[in-house]
Image (cartoon, rainbow, N blue to C red; front, side, top):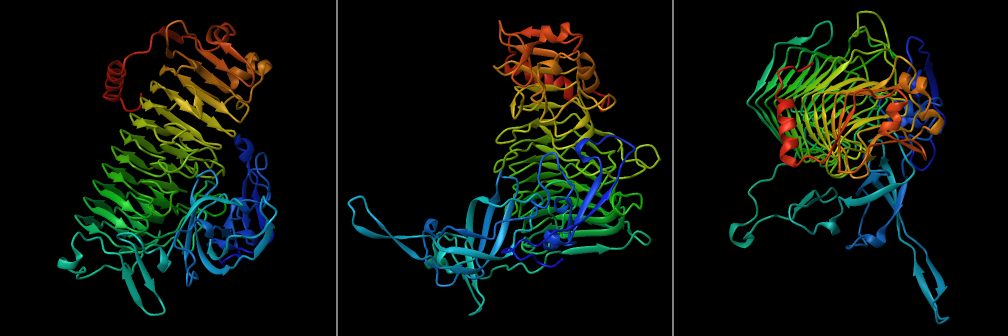
Length: 594
């Protein structure tokens, strides 16, 4: 796609809408996609965020492909003014800390001094900040916004003021390096420097009819791929991400490729990328660290919303990997990401020290994934409104994965025996099932600071036989169905057989879009939410609360209405050693699916 002029609105996109009638998908009932216009900045030039009928219950049409066109901030730069700021890069957060944009400065518009008066009535001159006008960028995320938040500048000579920083003068063809040495006068400058020039270090390409088969990549150290964040991005599906089909190791059109026992360190983009048709890829026992973007990313293709052609990564195993310090440049990054991909296994990985979620599902395509026995912590260290795991499901896709028949209902995803700490700003909890997420069976998980979440017409999710210690889903609660009404019968959310150690506010269930009449409506509640057989731990003398919009019931009142049978209350918060004993017993239980 061509680059959108950031100084102008690119014009209306053309919308394709495919009606879906075989199942309930709430506000995301139909598949809708925008082409051209505001989406000309993407490659390919399409996105649901450019459609005039996407997300209408929450957002406005044709709004969410935009990004800022300039910034007035020279007064914050310690080494300003610059001799030449053309080509400088501005990195900034999208509002909400959802992802980061990168822009290239095309010109600097000098501010005019404006006369005004001081408090004594004397004349003085007040200078406005200079304006950095962008010529490129703003295409690195899905749902746009008109303003950014925190920002920093790069690629200007005057800001070369700290060890390990560098600047390349393209006119003089000189590389300036602020060398990080303890005794430069005696040791001298480094004998060599590495300048990354390749986006991909290994590419394996076949096609669906003639795949490349049975390749092993083992025991290799990968480093120094070049940054690609200013290069073309596409919108992979209905989540918040923009993405590139680029990786230090790039697979397309393969079967039975094994990537095992390698080190992926100090790569400036994504380490491993699976594009389109790939089957039975095994990515195991690798070390991913200090990456500009993602550890592993998967992105398939469909015809409209029809995924039956099979041009997707399926049957991928991502197991026994060690992943940390990713997203050095693009903050919307994860250790593992998938879009338009299904039937994958994410097992026994350790992931920590991340700017956003450790694992991200950008859509609900096909389902049939297993995520088990992983350790995730220290996620969302630089962002918010997210969780250690995150998912969206805003576009219905047709596959045959669930039962062999064409359907927009995916197979269930099994999320089991994970140990997840939703610390830092993982305020959506351990499993942040956002916007429409459905068909997840979460069982036998130890979640610290995280509970059960559903919002914006999410449905058909189960939390069972798990431990939620001091849970938070934006607010302190064991389970939250928020910013939506309850789903209809047949699509209920379920919270059953769990241990929940409540925080001091004692909120057990939160339905923040339901009034007192709806809370007391037996049929509506039983159709949309099924709780029961949970064990709740509260401080002595306290009672659990079921909270609605400006109203609440005690657990006993809620049970008197016929709900939540078998749930019991234990007075006294168990000490940490007891909570750990509960967790060890559950996590080491023999059954991975029961």
